[in-house]
Image (cartoon, rainbow, N blue to C red; front, side):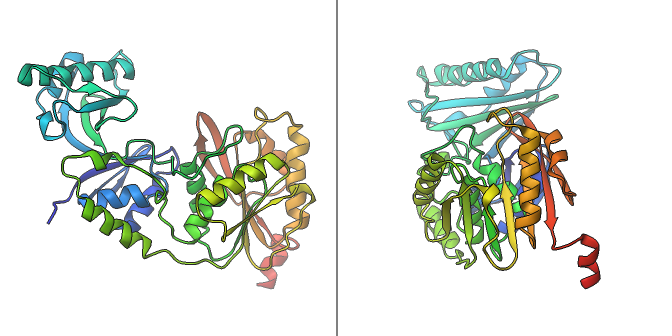
Length: 387
């Protein structure tokens, strides 16, 4: 039986608690939140499960060594102490990523990557008179070096390409939302598939697809063609398919409506194509509708979640635009819960509705707020009296 070992799941700022909850429900042990990461323990099968199943992880790292270091020479010497042939053949290929957050190091992460590459290449050269080559696109082994204050953690990157690359998105609009952030928004909203869901400005459909995968408990990365751990020397293909099958057996069918609107025909075409790529066309309807002319035509509770265009993306009158969002929600979408993410935090003042929740998040480099509006018929006060 495989032993449990420590792993780290990297995520976006603000999604740490969501990822920790995901890990716990998947069966991870000793789950601990950090900043943009969550550490946990599990065995080899759980490493595969985390990569296939987690919605809010960007990558899963397996730490192999942790050293105290004070400068670049310490880094070089420490990396030479690792028995690299356990992980990579001399004629294999590798790539290195680095993150540096330490006063001891004035050099940037790119220089740390180069220094680490030299240390590993020299290790092989001294021992075997040959060395593995660097391949940034399709390496046999992806190595991650993280320097935090005096500590250097060397990890194997089990994911390879970022896990936000689900494999379904072939067509996008300007500045599409990252799939990991989209899934995080849906999970933060509390939506689980037991009510209707609308994205009224759906763009290329990413939020809709992530919502449908959550509603039907479809593993986030089931459409991925490759994970880095498939190149590892201890890769167990039979175990991988056992884990994949166990996750597929937990898929359920949600019978509530998931709908996307957009006023741009080009966005509708792209969204429909991406929905087909994700094999979700039976669950998602995409319609050429201007939200400002729309009404809530579905019965029952509805979650409305959208990422309206930011001022820098489209040439719009921000004050008028956000006022129209508020007016449309207030008059046409009663008995719903609406969530909006925006980097134009001042613009939210013009929505004209009271927020019941405000969550700070990052969308790329942009500071954002993810806000909740509860749209009752009549006032909140009268709603409480009725109850």
